[in-house]
Every structure is written in C-alpha cells, then in structure tokens.
Image (cartoon, rainbow, N blue to C red; front, side, top):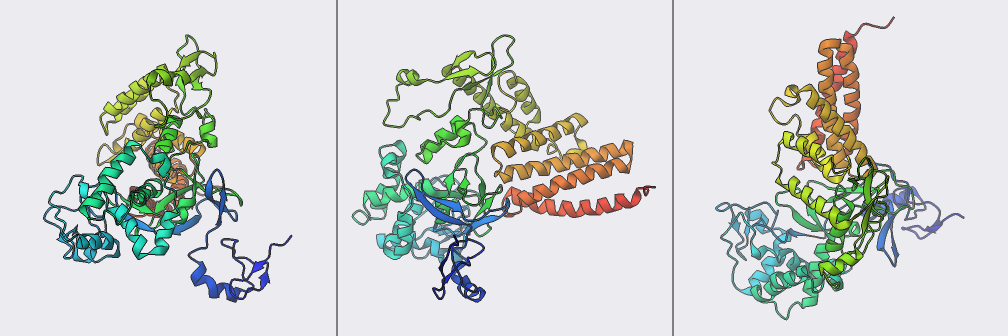
Length: 546
C-alpha cells in the first residue's frame, strides 16, 4: 500500500516524500524548495516515537550510513557547570584576576565588554538588577558558590520571558520523584534554591518545585561541552529524546560554535532506534549501571549489560584461582536491582542478595565480596600509579594478568594509556623507541581497536585516535625494515599505514579543532598528503615488473 500524505504547501495528496527524513510530503520539487527554509531545521532521518517504557525516543526513517550526520542542533540553554571557578558568563572562558570586565548593570565579571551584552547573560543580569545590589566576585581560580545557581536561574527566567522555550524545558524529564530526598536533592535545595531565594530576593517568585524541576532537567538532560576548560553545560531539544544503549549506534560531538552533532557510528537500518551511550562505554558493566542509576535514574538492561561476557570479550571477567584451571569467573547476571535511598543500606542485609561468580571452565563458585575486594585493591593500585610512566603501565599489566582477563576493563584502561604513551616520552617520538616497544604499541593499538569495534563501535573518537597511533607505528616499522630490505619493503608498510590513516581521518572528521581529536583529524589530512607523495616517489623508484 502506497503511503500518501498532504503536500506541505498545497495540501494535495501525494506519495512523494522528503528523501532526507521520509516524514514530510511534497507534490512537486518546486514546493519542496519553497518549504526548505522552514523544513531544513526539522529534516532529520528520524521520527519521534513514544511507548510506556522508554517514553519518547527516535526511530530511523531510512537507512543511515556509518559516518552520516543524523542531526545538528543548537542548544536551548547554556550555562556554567554547577561546580566551577568564575567563568565569563557570555562565552564561558576561565576568568583570571585582574583580567575581567564587570558588567556595568549587574557587576558579574566577563572577559570583555562584548560578553556583558550577550543574550546568554541577560537572566542573571536582570535578577541582579532587580535585587538592587551589584555582584562582587573577588576570588578566582577555584570553585565559587555564586555560580552554582546560574544555569538553573537561566532556565527559570524563561517562564516569564520565553514561553515557547519554557514549555520545551518543562517537557524534558527531571525525575523529581526519584531525586527527592537524596543527598544531591538536599544539596541543590540548599545551594541553588535557597541561594536564588535569598541572594536574588526571589522567594515567592519561584516555588521549590519549579526550581528543583529545573535542577533535574539540567542533571538528566545536560551535556558537558568540552570546547573550553572548564567545560560548560548545554541542554538540547531533540537530542534529549535519543535513548541510551551501552552499545550505541551513534556518537555525539560539537561544532566550534557549540552546536551538538549526532553522528552514526555504524550502519543503522530503517526502523531502528537511534541510541547514544549516556555513560563511559569503556567502564565495566557494574560501573556503567550504577552510574546510570545514580545520575539518570534508570537501570540499564541493554543487550550488552544483559550479556555477562559482553559479546564474548569477557570485559569484566576475573581469572579463576582454582589449581590447574585456566578459566574465568563471571556472575550469572549483572542485572540485579541497584540499591536506592528507599532500600536499607545495611551491609549485612545487602549481603543477603549477594550474587556469586562462577568459573566458565571448572564451575567453581566465588562470592561477590571476594571479587569486589580484589577489584577494589586493583583499583587502588591503578590510582596510585604515576601518570605518564610507560614502565609503570607495563608492570601493572604484567602483575594484573595473574588476576584479570587480558581484555578486562582495568587491563584495557592501562593498555590504552600505554599504547598512546609509547613514542611520546621524548620530542624525537617513535624514532627513539626500541623495536620491542614499537611492536608492543602496534599490538596494543590493533587489539584495543578490535575490542572497541565489538563493544562500542560508535565510540569513534577513541578508535580514530588509536588508529592514528597505529598508522604512525606501522610507518615507523616500515622505515626501519627498509634499512635492511630496501624501498620495496617500505612501500608495503606505507600502503598499509595509509589505509589505516584514511579510516582514522574518516572516524574523526566531525571533531572540532578545539578538541585533541579534531587536531588529530587535521594532522591526519596533512599526513595523508605526505604519504601520497611518498607512495608516488617509491613507486617510481622501484624497478618495473617484467
């Protein structure tokens, strides 16, 4: 049956749809062009769906190819992080003592006069003027309590000044019932709600429910924008409908002007849910699930969390210590209720529901308490490791290989750091690295890149960065081999290195230059040009085949 709909311009029934989103009908190309100025901001290859479990979510309206931009969106609200040193309230740059310009109307410091006039600064400026006394900020470089309320205040301002924006903010999830009474709730009430009432003299203007709902909207839907140090906070409209999955099919990045980009990390069939990972996909299952329960108020039951082997990677597996056994321990499930404030936190009562870890080979059973103590001890060892010390990383890997699966998240964390560290110890880079270390870097990059393809294929920043490191290691290996085997050997390595670099550049192509991955993307393009020239020269130098 042909799906017909009314043309957006003339309302004529037609089967022709916008090829981008597959949602809007046009009877002619002329009518599509006529409507494009309005439609282009809404044209995404996804439609909003809703069900009782997920609430609102996005579903692909057509096949989306890996690397395609699913949507690009401007923020509804931006503001400083809740815990932050003084930053410019116009552009969020870190402020330094003696290098600020105070707003002539309210006294809040900014980095320039132009920033004091920006739209972003209007809410706190408006309420400070109503208060009657200007703000005076005298300490810099450390977290300042006056900034904790700013982004919440900016949300509240919209109630009386922008009803459309206020409505969008109010439609976002805040989980007030789940948050109520928690330590975070009580802290927000004291440091944000009471501060807004007393400092800005707004008691009676905004209710506790209004303030705390805005706090929740920011906590649940806020995105940390890493374009500056410190990061600032932004809330988006349509992106807030994208659901979580620990093996997501999309990733997010940002443009230089603070827009968010949602990009497909894998091919997404039509009708599939659009997903991103709300937590760190390189954490173990228990850490991911606890973080989501604590910060987003839901217990993840995605396919990855439901599979204790995490797609056969044994990413959380611990070595069996039974004599002569070479198996690994995992719990029968990670999907157990996570304790909230309403459940008795008494450790003795919690142990009644303690899970057990079972060896996949000998079926030996170990209590969760023993496993957690082991992981806690290894975690302390990891925290105590000196930063930037490749030898310490190798010692950690060697020591913990007696206790953990080679792909365990602790082993992967240190292996990833080591892979990126090798070659950065001196200004001479890989040229001064020993052959053994160069081979180790190559092996680690390949191993972790393959692991990411299985566990988190949409995590393009880490994988793209790893492949950049891998291309450099392979090129250096070729240079060394060519000294013994001649230019023919070098050409093979350069061709392989170029292929890997092309993939790296593709994975990182949407990253802004403000981020390390964006700078790697720029360097990858430069390196590709140099490699093309090198390949041409090597090919000319080689004798022609008979």
